[in-house]
Image (cartoon, rainbow, N blue to C red; front, side):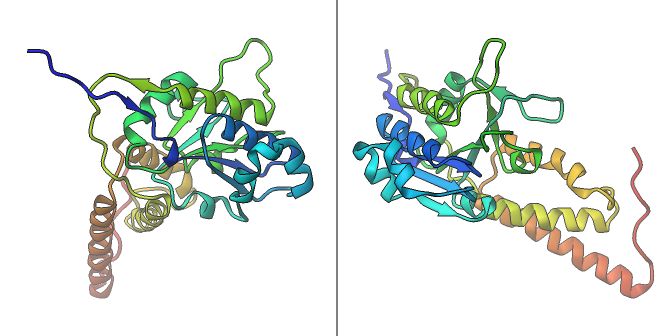
Length: 260
């Protein structure tokens, strides 16, 4: 017997465009217009070089005035991303230490189930250099826009390409269940706590803990941790801290470093 499946489209109300350190107000306005064209209502601007509302509105035009009026301007990237459960970074660079990079079309399909119950941020870097490694560490996935020989795209052009693919995303397959994932704020608290205890027990090199924690971040991004799982991991960390304190008071000292 044939089973009727539900047509599922990406939930654009849970999608936000996040522009980090944009240099030109005109690009912010053009991004707002692209968002409005493609049905995306939320625009977040993190630490802009200049946020001239007159120049922004000139490019946004009156059609996207409501997107600009509701636009959130935040000084710090971590604060800008903290409400989101899933963060996608845009990049033109790839490397062995980065997550698998997806195409805009593949990303849009992957976000269909995630976006049903989770807030998703599409993160764009500054016009001159894109996102740096310290900014990509917040990302659960990466996306790159395929180009010919010249890889550099205008910021507003990149926003339009991603927004277009998100708008078109749809599927007739049965919707897989994706739970509410932990927010960026919850995850960053866990990573800080985990890094501190792993350094204390000499599991990671104390001279460069961020480098060693990148593998932990990539592993957790693939899993997709829930808020209650983050609480569980932090509970384990607190128990490890208690045990280490007991050992220190007994004079046993820390365990020897773990060797590969």
